[in-house]
Length: 258
Image (tube, rainbow, N blue to C red):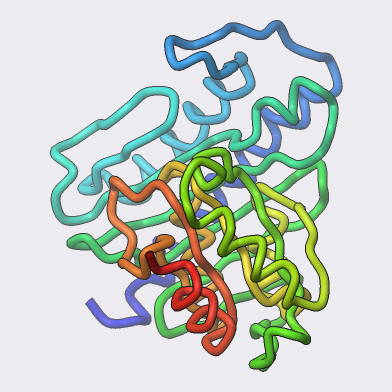
């Protein structure tokens, strides 16, 4: 498939994200009860209904594709075309009434991520990208910053519990000392900022592929580099992130290597 052939799937993903946004806005206004899943994470009716809305749109648009969603698992064999869906990434923020949650929809083709939509309806922004067509925010194509000097770099950390338990914790401390500034925007937010040139490096050690698949396409199409903490490409089993401008990513990768 060529780059232009992702235009229709990208439009479907954007429509699916908006369908989920309607569900999320509804429950944001009225409030929800919270359940605790077997992995000790929260889930709400908003998560489930948002995923159902997404599945309905994507299923009509591309019935041949499999769908792997946070709440309802894998529908299909997972080969070929595979949608990766997190209907409400950041449920803890949602239930605590902070706007740092989003809908994440990505498409994988034969193991490669080819498009992504990241929609944060209460925060108030959406970004999208597809292979070869760039990364887009509010109707404009965006790019990462050309920052190449760590002393000028702004970095952000998200979920880093695992990182605190090994020697990379000291390496991270060194990166923080040598950088220009450190923040902890987390969730979708720091990846959006990276893609449009407002950050230079993002580090996380505890994620799920459904959290980051769409964001990886967005960052890459904006000219950034997006790998796991060991510099490896993303797979369905990826659990960490090192994302940044090409030069800053390379420097951070060398310093985190053990």
